[in-house]
Length: 385
Image 1 (cartoon, rainbow, N blue to C red):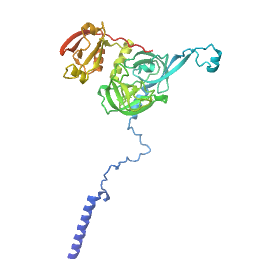
Image 2 (image 1 turned 45 degrees about the vertical axis):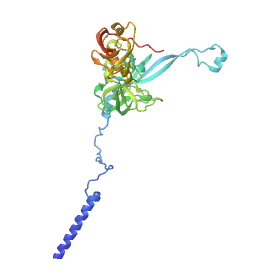
Image 3 (image 1 turned 60 degrees about the horizontal axis):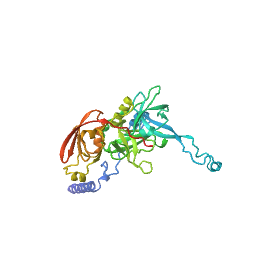
Image 4 (image 1 turned 90 degrees about the horizontal axis):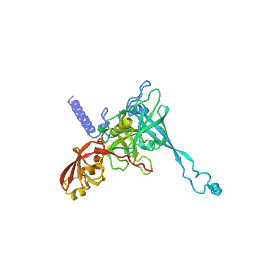
């Protein structure tokens, strides 16, 4: 009996030792043990025949927005220049009527966003610029002729209007000021005329400026695919709220390279309201040209920091000239609003109503100078032929 218990104790000891070794070195061999490692997957249970389709992803946001995003088709007359020798029968024999001075029709394609039940549509200025006819196609198949309410080439925004019976879907405005780099966004439009398309990406950067695209720049940069035909379409958050109007891409070949730019809805809303109310946008102006202060310029002017802008030119007889502003002055603030660069200066002055008296704080010969300026009305940009 004693020998039996001795054998049992030894067998138990050996078994426990083996379990300890296996648990330490190869825990996955034990039944019910938790598997570890990067390839471990947790699969969802099989769906029954009556199961509802999954609502994960961005289908809900897309479904909410797509009816309010429209395709815009424009046409305009293209007058061909006359060529010499058109009366020469030998010239016409070789070249035919290809060079006749006859009007032809050109076409353009873009997108837009319905913003109100009255039929107002927000799009890009360059989409409807110089168009003779504008046709809008809704996602539900309806089409309507549109008229231009007004446009603003300095922000590349325009408002057009349609009249359709039976009601139209509208988009919900989001809070672009609360957007953050890394937020997921969707771009919706009609790229290359293939039909309404949704692409996904993130916000790559905010407040992009100095790109040389427009006078007023405050872009949302995104890597959501934006291609020709997307211009004027919607950039929305994952809840389907409008964050921006897709406007431009950085690309040497015209296709998406992951660098797209959208005008934030905070800017678009201000421009849109002025266009709907007045037919155009009115901005403040003081008649100066300015450049950013670089560390080298700040050092040459014996400044301790690079805040403010350097006044490089003052228009003779303009508001700033009458107020005593001189080339070489450092403009530090407008109505006590500190200026970081020339872009913030432009925004600060343009937001002031014409005829209002504003305070400019300057640095001149290392001394602070304060002047009062009567803000004028910003001239309309020249139309390039």
